[in-house]
Image (cartoon, rainbow, N blue to C red):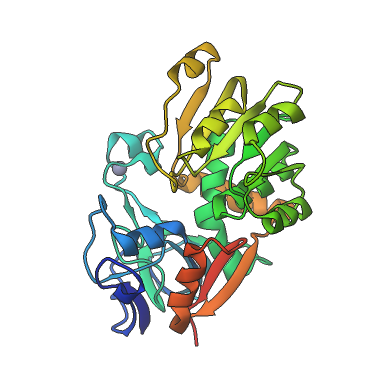
Length: 344
Ligand SMILES: [Zn+2]
């Protein structure tokens, strides 16, 4: 079978398309004939350094993906051979205090596909059966795969962490990025007023076409001042942030008193000024978030089935063009998901 592996750390020279053996399915696992995987920023992180993440080399890349169940235990009752499934990327221990209180995503032995263990950019993948979720009719493999990384992350940020309420406003930085676009789609579907930022006029106009209420060009507008002007000096209820660096002070200044900021990334720097006085005087809430629980993924899939939400897809590449696909993501040119087709 073909798979995409990292053989070391660096640029695209450590990313190879190789021919190898199909994985052997263990008891309790499903062997899935993969159709698509999508690219995530963490794929670039694993290629570039992978620092702080225990992993072996070579390792198959890819966090999310979808395919068809080819083999399961005879005793398996939830999954059947031939079923279309999307993969939940986190494998948990099920025994630690976090797993036992239903917060598996905090598991202290958590392993992510494509980070701590072989990932999804392969023609066959073996995963624990609980990591394979049925794809509803009408949802393509590409859409189902694309939901997992970004929409699940945005889901947890908006609904579990920020606990958004009807009529609230949300500011989403860096529209065009996967989590940001997913947050915009989810926020619109539950009736929030949305503010989005980008340095690209093209991305802002595409966000407006997706229903963004206020589009702020951060290359020439001060985001916080613009948000305050648009809200009569009040600020927004919630900020969804994954950039960090110079964006962080803008995010903090855009919040209403008592507002909530949820962060899931720091691509532009992870040590911005804390601005503690602002946090306690204005009683802001700062929350971190990563991915989402299996139960949240199930909720998301049900929500997608009910609302007809479809992820925004930027482009699709064959496995042979993985370098081009990674370049597109790295350059930040994409609007929506970059997809890798895994079958010839
Ligand atoms: Zn655990």
